[in-house]
Image (cartoon, rainbow, N blue to C red; front, side, top):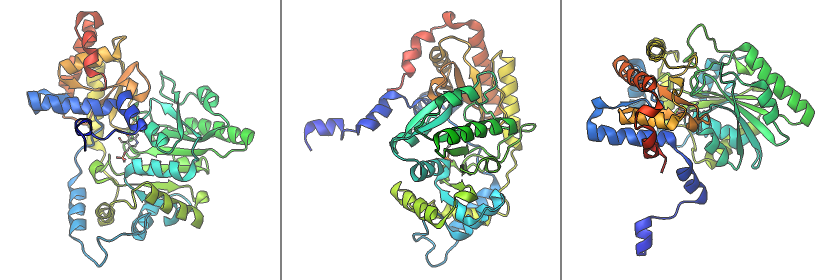
Length: 413
Ligand SMILES: Cc1ncc(COP(=O)(O)O)c(C=O)c1O
């Protein structure tokens, strides 16, 4: 190793370098939070930037304990790539859709693994994947690592619903898949019947016109976190070329355990797709979803979780945001508030909040620069404190703080 290599490390690939240089806002805010906590102490920093779930409930923690203690020959060995057959069966029962069997299920490393698996298995290099902005920032790298182009289409800002005309305009002869995310990270929007029907109409029309068969990928990472009167609809009932990416990360508080699954519409499932998915699991380096997490799922009598604590926090955060005079999108589900920046310069406002030790994620991370995202899975006291500061800065106005000047502090490295 020569001196230069030792100092600079090994050069990153061009793509990785570009990612590092182009953004990584969530990572940046998280690092900033850690730096502040080390410097000022945990209590003085309110970090609402990352989408952390609440802690796993006791029943889930106990199930993991039992699963970790379990032993049988092969307990720690390689398993079928798509998961233990009994876990896939249990999952198919939980999906509860006509014709659903274990053959339509692949256990994955979270919804992230499920999305990557679907993209690798069903979309060809060079094709386009359309997503609705605001969107989870990782959609773009999930696509780009498979040599697919990600094409964001703005949602209607007033309602956060899919803008059907914009979707029609975004579809091209190269569009192979559309990603929708419900409940949405970051907007909290839940797609209901008429919106789902309208999206599917657009896809069917495009399919007829281009003789393609667009894949609909529904990211349901927050599926169980839907707050009445909003209601989940079953995407599989609308369109046959649908896959669902689901996760236990959020509602069960298992984000670090990396467990989720991909569901194929039963009409898509054959022995050939099974082999294709297995091949892609290995090609993506996942091989299989973690064994202990899969076995823990079997240890649980029910997979339905009390979402009451999330709802209480949603209500608290929303009320505090409204009392602070902020313009918040209707958080029908998920774990975030999606707030319009009260200053024209969102980065300036986010920086001014950071100066006051409140960390949120600027909307540019989600392809919508006019807003910012706040995760509400903190204590009510911390949420109140953060939103009171947010309201204070909003009332003071952009010109009257030094936040704008400090925006460069938060620019991704
Ligand atoms: C919209 C969305 N999709 C997918 C994921 C990935 O989740 P998982 O931990 O299940 O991989 C997240 C995580 O924050 C998310 O917000």
